[in-house]
Image (tube, rainbow, N blue to C red; front, side, top):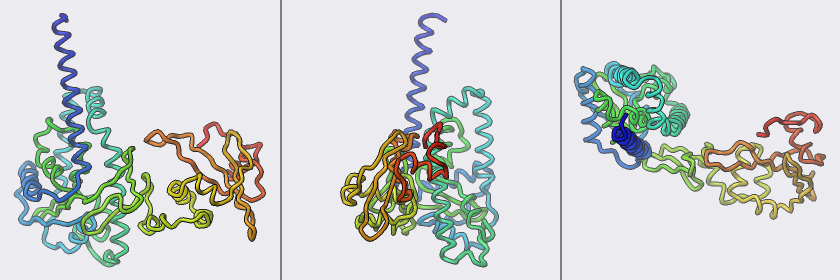
Length: 361
């Protein structure tokens, strides 16, 4: 290769890298988009997707304010015909993936995926799982599933949710296929302008996008004063630094007291309380005494006049969070505990001399 050819090759590589980065950023924005759907554009995308699959466009397009509302709507559909998700999404998806994989080769495909879809995959997959679980719980909580036969799940709301085309939350795969799969143009258009949707022979149900989405610097759902993800009909997810919590739990955080924190039995919820309240503030307000410290943690004792001592070991998780920080945990241990090692060992059912972790977690 001549020097000129080498320079051109380097230039082409940098240009491709720049285009790939721009594509990934664009689809990242699609995945995180909030606000009203562009209904006309989304419906046009649905028609393109149907035509690409060799199907006649659906006779009716129905809109829902959230995935939960879509499930409720699907329950009452009796004349929508069979699901055509396989023709509209699954088959063209698989065929375009196979074509692109053959074109790029195994190593080329792996590199392409890492540069386009992979960064979005973990974020969107986790969010989709959360939405499905919350919608299932909310639907079953209404009692609507008792004796009902939903259109796509025959009574099982989980199957209905699994049958959805994920719209904006298909961003990871659409980023990888961007510019490569013309057959996926309709799917991409819907994703850019709306949320989840369900394709049937005679009808399609499409969801609005969320109206709110709050994440921390690591991309996890996170909000302390309201829903981290919310749809306009009130369906919502609440989370603190990625951990799912209830709306009632969050509402109680501003009124936290050291006593309320001490009596919380769930260690994960207690950690959230301490993070919100502040570790230093908690120790000061509780009159905690630093009793012992070693490589396993720090032992704190809170003496109570009318009850047994509250003894806790402060430990730091050696495995970093996605944002690089390390979580602090407080382990409630028996009042007789005298050293941090003894307390941590007790949580594993071991004697202090038996506790020799290879990796502390």
